[in-house]
Image (cartoon, rainbow, N blue to C red):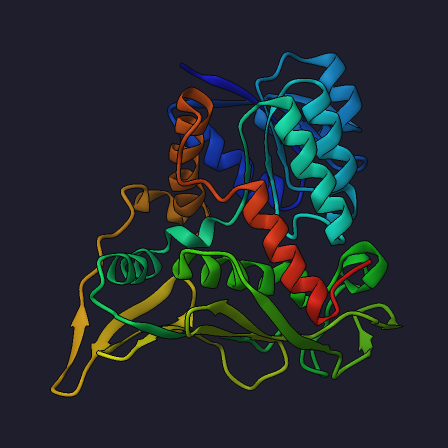
Length: 340
């Protein structure tokens, strides 16, 4: 069966959501909604264009609503899509605060449609392999999960366009944009929800500039969480946009061995297993959708997620990141200071 998709948001929505659905055999993107950009994207892609989700819901027949608009719109857009009886995939950060996340979980339960959050990074091959090592007790007993992403793009000398992303009230900042992904990874690898969490968000460079003007940012350019999963397992999760290097490290530390995945970016990783006797590099099965990485590196990962979303629609069970998962991530985010 093919499911008709309407996409909300013409930024990441056009760059990643639209080509991912178009390339997947079970989905057909038929519409896009955006206040400024929908008309141009729709004409180029030969789909329908609307200014708002409400107009799109009234103007075209849809099975799925895929929400890739800024986070301050997620709560209202998800509620509207669910009220219309649609299946929903929502980008991260899920909402601006825990209260909104709880309301969306309740609304999804009442609607009874398939719902997921776009945490496509779970399908990075090295993260999948780490998850399998833990699930099969090759790393046991688990004691610590380490998830760190370092980047340059928010250093003081960086030109960044002054828009909603630099406004806390609209859900901007690194905690929502990237730490949410990393918390989801840690919780998914742990296989259970957090018991408690603590941490901080930090704004090292509030004075910013783009090519036209200077402006003040009140969002975090670094975010740091310590998460307790109970039974002796903790996670240290860090994202920092102000460093001199580009680096990603995902590690699972157990009493018998450690497995470490590292690289310069999330799409350039290698995986190693380390114990008392040796260090071995592990081969990881690449995505079956790898050829679509030329469109955008996220596309193969999103297509893997969509495989599971089809199962959720048709069988009610799958491995999709759920609204409930996203609620627990939101609780961690709020515990370290991300809330609006």
